[in-house]
Image (cartoon, rainbow, N blue to C red):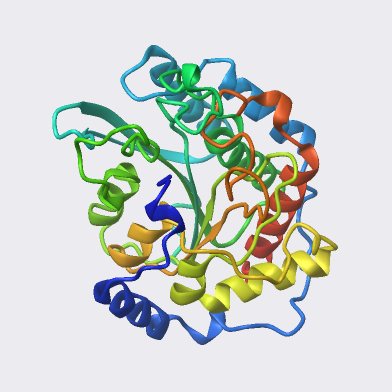
Length: 336
């Protein structure tokens, strides 16, 4: 996730046009709800999700082109399949910010009820930052990030939801997508190359231009990024508010109905360059980003962001629970 562009409030005219186009295409079904009805949904198991975080971290940092990355990818495919999902992989060579490094990227798409016409998209990135370039100690800047929160947490929530859906089947379809090469963007210390938001979110950029299904049209998408860190709360991210305000409203009101208002305050955050941007701009799918916003500290993403301290010891099961229960409730509320 970008370090300087990420906090920018600059929007190009193309983005504005894309936002309006996506907003105009949203159906009445996705409109704001005063009081969302809570259809019976499975109880999200935070301990199970926590274990899924630990399982990913046990492979080591999942940096593209490493053995840890390859082995964890195999694990994710096997896990989703074990929960009844149909899995499609997009294996593609992507070029990093320097124009030279070739990343052996792997988007993993796990579909529940792949033949169902009505669908939802839930996504997260699964790769780790190659450099802890936001660490307070410069001696750590070239060390890879373990990525317990910044990658593993979002994937863990999706795995737990896939497990639960197997126990209480849905009529609609759900596509869980693990995007690769999100976090290989320009390092903070790099001065030779021009900073650009296009050096981030490479896997989702590719998928948005080459979806796994022709003319893929889910009702909406939800991106989960850093959804397990201690002290995390989730403001209404600004791109999400421009692209899909009705879906933001639906998620935040559902969280409040479930008693998780302290995790989903009704304040707005900043514009964040993340995987939901190409999903909105390129694929034209209204997609909301659930991402933390810290008002104090060295980073708006929390004290462990892009540091060597992004490890399992800094994961809070209560945060996983709040996000996981909210999102699975949204899914089951749409199961009509």
